[in-house]
Image 1: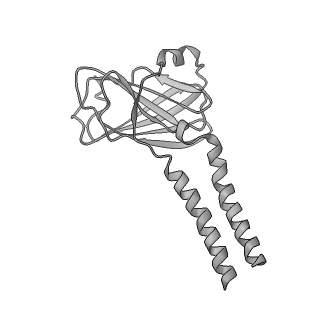
Image 2: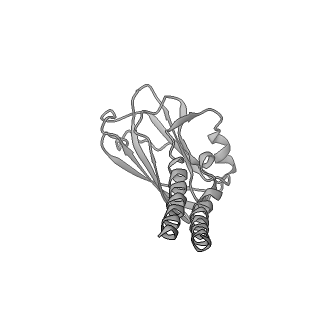
Image 3: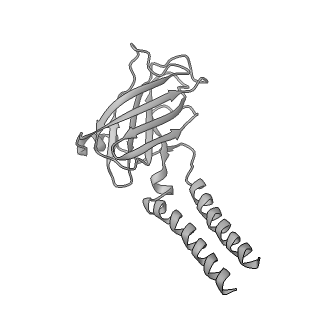
Length: 188
């Protein structure tokens, strides 16, 4: 009986460590000060295509005439940039709607950051989320649900908080805890 309890304890501890580490990766969107989109456009070859779905919050104004741009990429320096997504004629970024864009750029995988840029007189465009489907990468969703400040790159960078090696560590920690529990249960 003691062996089963010890094994269960080690299994639960490994699972708790794995879950607590994966939750720490969720961060709130933030402004970034040292981001140069012009540099991205100059160094990036267009060789992969992405589908980007931007959902506008129902708490956003009915429509916006602001200029909206996007930049996203991976932890390896592969970056994609589109200066203008907005189109006042087609009324993109209307309240409670989703807009889909096809964007070409460098092949980035896995995508771990996205920044939006808003410039204009209006205040209050509020994206709900950005979902990116791309090359050799699972779809990734970044939740915003906050107005984008004027004249600032604003978004998420999970590359800093969740390095690519942590994707490999989580299953290893779980397995190590399980093996350790098994060995201890035999030994006790």
